[in-house]
Image 1 (tube, rainbow, N blue to C red):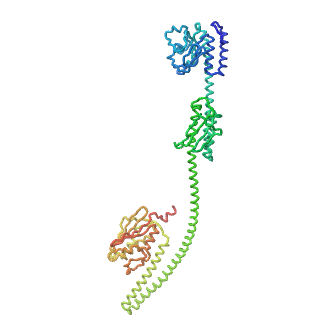
Image 2 (cartoon, one colour; image 1 turned 180 degrees about the vertical axis):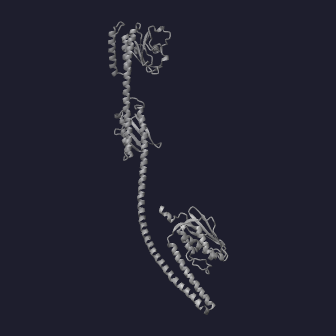
Image 3 (cartoon, helix red, strand yellow; image 1 turned 90 degrees about the vertical axis):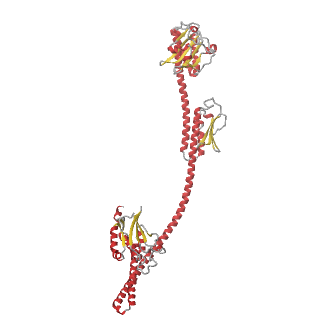
Length: 592
């Protein structure tokens, strides 16, 4: 195809030449680079048109700049020494040869020197005598330019047909070769990405294996690295954590290394290093791909998280083991304590049962004693009355007084026995908790004590602010106020003129007060007045058993409250009784 052709070549011969050139270029493109293909195509055109100058440039998609791509062999050897390959060149700054882009058709300049708008040539560029430049148009946009120049004779329309055809054929082959190379690069890139993803996936699977130690994860991770790099057979790696190293089987340190620090909580923990055993072509980072740098960074970051979580898990497991040990020890202690407590409960139950039996015996004894004392006392009382009534005329005044004293003492004994029975009853009789009317109870007590109050000119005050209805045992409330009022009447002395019942409440309690202005209670008597059989030290002449306030104390306790005396004053006394506000009436228990 290097044979010289003249302008009189037949169309049939030209068509056969086109086919032959096209097939040869397609075959040539299979085993040669893009630049070599362009040079071959330009050499074929130059041979056909006897043109020593030839160039093929690409037009950028913006239609504003050119990529100076390739020149024919003769152009580079004989005519042009100007630098320019690969340079992006603005169309506005180019010479008249880009007129074909503006006109979107072939342009012939057979008298180049006479062109008024031509521009000067760069240093080292060949002198142009005549030129033919053809644009390659796709979808109404120029994609490339093929130009030839310095043919010995003028360029003709036949030359335009030849150059246009070969420019198009060359572009189609270039376009296909570009697509093939892009596909090949994409395939290679995808293969590399698959290896990278496989590496990250493999590390993720390691994390899912809960039984793996940190040492095992590090070793299996380092084994995943070489297959994920571009040259697996020439790659080795190691991971350093603290004072330990984890390496691939064939490990050699070289000058070709990629490394990345491993951090846990922003603190240096270790390093990953990937080595190439033999030198490879330069890439984005020495012989390594930039994508391999991204992969290494991702692995280091993931390892940092794995180490952090693994350490946390180990710390948690250690804490759990310690806690389990403590629980076991504490369980043993509690079991021993429970055994001791059970033994103590059994012993206490035995004691309670024994106390209950003794209590029953004491109660039976108390009833028996009360019965045995009460009957003789009644008999003594009756005999003293008969003695006074039938033999009173024969008795001296002293004898009559002795009879009266015997009668009073007998009455005291009977009253004492009744008080004992009442106290026992207060402790054992089940309460009948209901809604009761305080107004009704206080009116009854006023009526009960009216004769004593009137005779001694004593006033009993019941303020209006006392609630009408409370929840309590009616009989118990009557006993409380009856005993306290009786206590005031017995021990108030001649100066007693007023007894007042008061009331206040808090969140949990009703609090009642009974205040009198009598002679009061001595300070030394105050601590004992709520105990059994305790009376004021100056009350020997007053009838009573000393059990009234003890009964009040017992009843208040059964109602969830207590009884107390307010601080001692020179005169008068105030007793306070509290009752729970949360007692439930018997009638409501069925619905609770």
